Length: 286
Image (cartoon, rainbow, N blue to C red; front, side, top):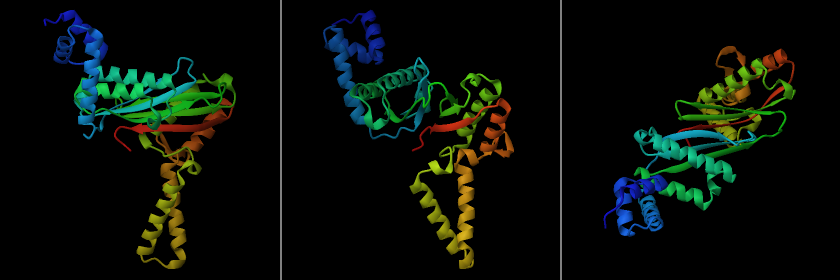
């Protein structure tokens, strides 16, 4: 049957599918819009299954906040090529997916509802590439009065950061020194990639694995047995200084650690500042 151009346009807007796919679906359904949408969805599911094994390491990291600012969600959505990731259509899809994730309260990729899974599968047919919802981070303010979120997207969506701060005096949330501090700390997290705020937050298995590696290296170095513990301890301290945000050298002033910068700032503004927690996604990183 002849297909109405306006119907094709409407179907494309509803599904994001290509022109020829929309024409075929409308023709097959006899012009029934709902049946055509079902046909395209079924095609999308088939495409998703076929493409699911293909590597997807390009894409975007994006961050959205709830309307009241109390909740932040960061997502990483991968595709196969940088060409697709740079299109407005892909960026709109990622924004819409992130909004649905934020609104539905999803905590991680292991708990996504069927509607979000379907959105991803349908996108595979739309873009002709494997699409993967790789990571989700969700933060709700620890303290409504004292909590402040700072986010940062780096390299046009290649790196995303959310940091939560607690300020002692909530009336100083808009203090210029404080705002400059939280912005700089978010930049620090983006560029230096700390694994946690403090050494106590680092996963125990990672710390123990690193200690074991340093112990083996020390033994193989031929150094006297009585100084091996000292060597391992020194290397662990360097490891903590590189992976703990508070112990990292502040990138804008290497004479300070980030903790010293925090102490300096809270002295200037006259109230306590705590860096409560952080989340950082780097595109394609496990």
